[in-house]
Image (cartoon, rainbow, N blue to C red; front, side, top):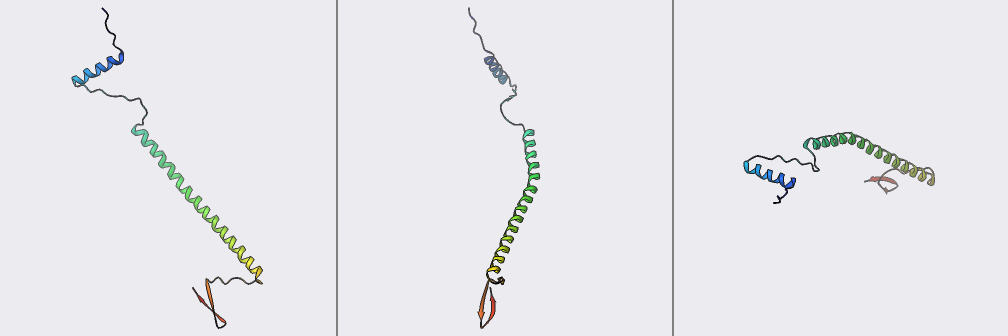
Length: 110
């Protein structure tokens, strides 16, 4: 007579079912991909630390960029005023938004 052979996987499943019937709890161990709570908290802490370091540096770089743009604008205005003065016998613009001539004198509006 030939006895049927039971594989180890079927044998462990049968033992698990028998333990469940007896009321025993079986602890499942997962070796699959995943993170533990501690690993997740460590990653979050590292990201927070990097952000704390990076934000002041980014603010400084933004201020430096704004400063460079402002200096460039001032240089362009200075060049424009100098070019205007060259073309108009050394006279500069008075800087008013609007001026209206009233009987030979100037009244400022705006």
